[in-house]
Length: 201
Ligand SMILES: N[C@@H](CCC(=O)N[C@@H](CS)C(=O)NCC(=O)O)C(=O)O
Image (cartoon, rainbow, N blue to C red; front, side, top):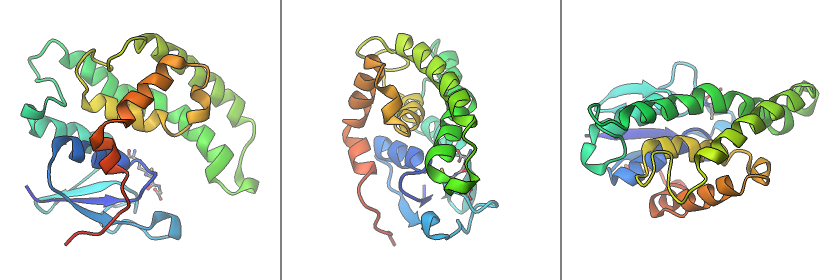
């Protein structure tokens, strides 16, 4: 399988890069200098990430991860469709982009990313309340030494771990989430996935 990942560090493209490292699947990194104004040439909106797999382009970090994790069942990063854990896996794969991301993204946009004069201050307390409500729920869910599905680390942990890392300062009151983040980011595949980008042939 020939995989090219269009990638900008510190964006949602960390998700497929981390997954590809967990899968030990060779891939070519195609750096996109998004923060310098470059657009992603293979994404219809110019965004990252995108992958091309044997020449076919796929966008949406969640869809890319979901699809890739299923392609390599022997790596156990996604329960099989017949596995009783599959329903919970799907729940978390959709929970992250559907429920956790929106308030986190609004906080980031209106405190860090948008130019100051474009930020809307009133959004921040509203989204912070919602985000903290979700973090309290996740803290209970992860009040143990494992992962979202228990002992088995899965692609859902990549979706969650990358998103919680956007706003580390908001995890301060949630020791179980701090411990979880430390646990998942200590993984060798994560460490490889944050290495500086070198375009590959
Ligand atoms: N839902 C999409 C969001 C893609 C997205 O908005 N990516 C951001 C970086 S995290 C981006 O490229 N922003 C610049 C742009 O879209 O112009 C995904 O998960 O892949």
